[in-house]
Image (cartoon, rainbow, N blue to C red; front, side):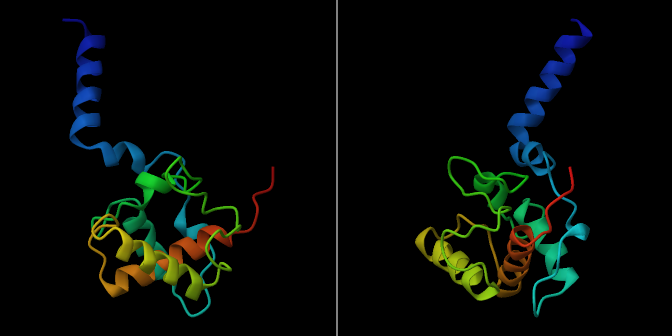
Length: 134
């Protein structure tokens, strides 16, 4: 068996066994560079990042919104600062996430109220980041 076959086999096993791991780092933003929302904390943004990427509270956000939060066919781009459901405020984002959780129970993971607040802070930060210089 060639080395290439072994490496390909290992990659296939990892992709099947841990599909979220493949999602977690593709184009992922550094949460330490994101702004903190009004009334929020850096710790909430950091926890929200972990939940978004499936590393806490069984979060599943990245599955639909992409690891880079730039959207997929199933979830909109959260980085543009253009809000489909609301005005981009902390309150509007929390309302939208709450609505989504009621419409599809369990699809967002096992989020406690503090986890929801953390995801809200992270999503707010994604949509309110300063544009990167070219």
